[in-house]
Image (cartoon, rainbow, N blue to C red; front, side, top):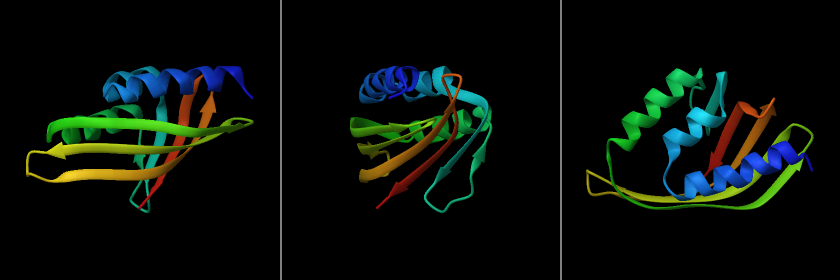
Length: 117
């Protein structure tokens, strides 16, 4: 396995598990990152991604958890399964199970796609 990617994923598991999404994004997203959730239009650029995340986080009233498991790394690509759970100010309880496919370059995420149900 690629130790740089493996170490970054270990750190991400801790950051995301503690609900530190903005910190994780600031630390690991490349300035020109492309993020895509399911079949939605990709978000291009670190600044755009962070703005969208801040908008989502502004609606969260209770962070329940984010768990990463079954990590795999091949070359500059990593995969993992994640479960994310939170409540929002509209009274909704959200639980997402997803697989993340991430492409890395120089310790930064340059492309990531989330596949979820």
